[in-house]
Amino acid sequence: MSISQSAIRNPQWIRPLVRELHPYVCGEQPKIKGLIKLNTNENPYPPSPKVLAAVRAAVDGRLRLYPSPTAQALREKLTKLHCCHADNIIVGNGSDELLALATRCFVEPDGRVTRGPNKNVSGTRVTRPSEVVQYFTPSYSLYPVLADIHGATKNPVALKPDFSLPSVAELKRGRRKPPEGGTPNRWDFNAALTFVTTPNAPSGRGYSTKELESLCRAQRGVVVLDEAYVDFAEENAMKLALKHPHVLVARTFSKAYSLCFQRIGYFVGHHDLIAALHKIRDSYNVNGLGQVAAVATLDDLPYCRANFRKVIVTREWLSRELTKLGFRVFPSQTNFILAQPPLFSAKDWLKKFRDRKILVRWFNSHEVKKYLRITIGNPTEAKALVKAARKVLLG
Ligand SMILES: Cc1ncc(COP(=O)(O)O)c(C=O)c1O
Image (cartoon, rainbow, N blue to C red; front, side, top):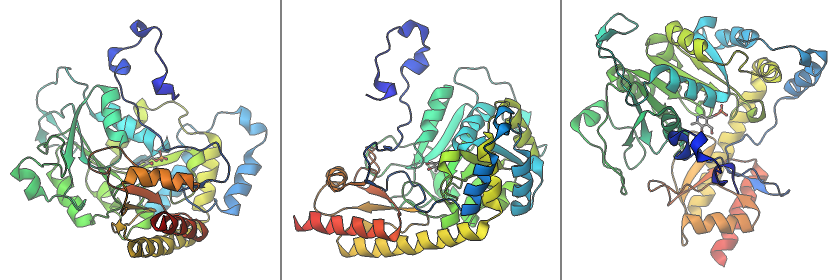
């Protein structure tokens, strides 16, 4: 039984909003050994030996001390990578923490009185940001949960059927009908907070900086460009965070930098937004060993970049092989692919792969339930997946 399913014995102590909340569902972390784990977009390659050495060297008497509350050394390193200042950066306990902080920082919970017109960071008069958290569907399934936790209004708006971004003109034209059911919604150019997963998850589709910029320009509230997978993509939109005062770019060390375990993510953006986020974060929100690991990672970027390339080569190989077997594979700019399997439903394939000791991900939501999301493993794992798929098809 998961934590969320356990019976609440004394519901009166718990806020109704929390009682009714559907929490985020994490991908399975298997307890059985020997499974090939292609379900949570972890990197198949370990952190660099230099990172492991740095973490080991930090495990000493220092553990009794608090870490830097602002992840100072890490932010300094990141300023060099992104050509910005330390006050343009906030580090979080994974980018998930920062997505949650952004929701708390920029969005009014439902039912609160919103005050009249206000000025935005560039001094223009705008209507005060609303209680709306907006995102495309499908995208990262945490966004609606964050909105629900905060008691905000959600505005999910469908991507196009091929998971491309609707243009601003298309968004202005009216309601977007999701491909298979679901409520069509109108895009809200005044939403307090808009999350855009770019490249998109779970489809893997990449977006150009040009189209993202058009969208950002049209938004009057804060836009978070969630670039969790961008190191596997052709383009990134970091420059938008340093150009537009209402745009934040979210990055993580989890996926491309093999540090899921350490929980390090960061936002880059205008110093006013970043300062507001610093105000509401926990005092020591980023653990010390994580900070050490991330700094050491930035000192060994060639190692990481070689891994990005390996993942991309395997991704292209796997896409080709699965296509040959009759899977419909969407082009990906991430470390996973979305594929519609042949012959059986995606849910059945999930089980068939699991029976063959391979974990992949299936989402029970109307837009993507026809598909499997498959993390790109190492070449041996990818070959094992293709072999298993072939066996399933041969019966
Ligand atoms: C789109 C997207 N954003 C953010 C995250 C969170 O990453 P982190 O490990 O930094 O919290 C994930 C994790 O799966 C993700 O898929």
